[in-house]
Length: 465
Image (cartoon, rainbow, N blue to C red):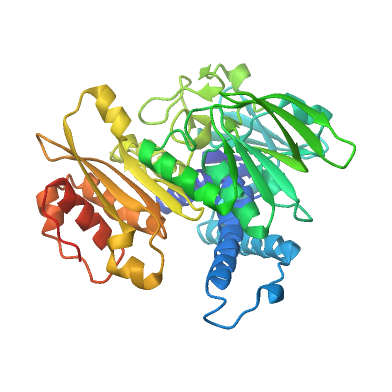
């Protein structure tokens, strides 16, 4: 069967690209090896937000127990139900995606795709039986990513887990050790600590959440330590061995000394790798670098008619990035001059408590690049809405170019900041200056006033709404 476009993978890059292609009148097929929605829907963005929402509800109950006469002994966590609720959310959203694909006339094929020369594809089922041969004028590789392989997991497979297993544990571990403090590590650390587990985080870099602005990294470390999470930065694992009491012993090297930890479960959150093996790209001759597919600005590979988007290319490994790359790729195939993605204006969010949101350059990056810039900060502890909500943790930090007044970066930590960052993204996209933002009236009382206040602070125009 021949199509205008065949897309390998139905994650946020693949399924969004397929719908856009269908809207533009193209005959489209998606080939999916596992579940529709990819990692984002099944084992990433959606289920993690569900369990984190449960943790935040629990936080509110505990925080307000005196106000509503709730006794501590009456709070009982049904951990399996928390996990079950997240799986039900996933199933509901999968139904929604299937509906959208069907509504737009996208042909869905369930199986393992193997790329062939001359833009042909063989599809196999789980028993490795060929269930179809397809061809297309254009083939888009959007097979996503998978957790990095860990050598120790082969020996201790029941004790060492990835984010997939962390979202489907049958019971709450008494103690969990998390290796890596990116978004995945931070979110699971907050979740398991909220549920009642003892949590250790081991990070090889000097800072927790090392890619963030330094002040954000320092703040989240203090916040986590107040929760009772033990943080080991500038540390790495020497050895992991089995213990006799249903746990593992972790020997770690810190910047000061060796430390021995005991844990029931180890969650490796050290990142993901592109899912480019065993799909036939070597046979076709598609160029890769460190397993990432190399593409041009229109997501074309070095082989005519083959494209790649999302986690398989060396751009930010984020669902919203993959979706926009998918749209851009399809529109360029169709001859529409799609506006290029500005990869310096991609918001990054962490949904722990406090939340983290950022976009643009960090202060350290600007210093390295030799920028002269203004810094403005405003704490939520001075904001009317945050005080009335009793959520005063955190701050907003803005960075503006001293000469051109360009908004170079913004970094936030606090309650609901992941909903605030979009204002900054839009403002930077429109090349707004501080003058324009300061003269844009924000509602009072609102959390968005923190952005206005931080900019005012950068330019010595304190408002304190």
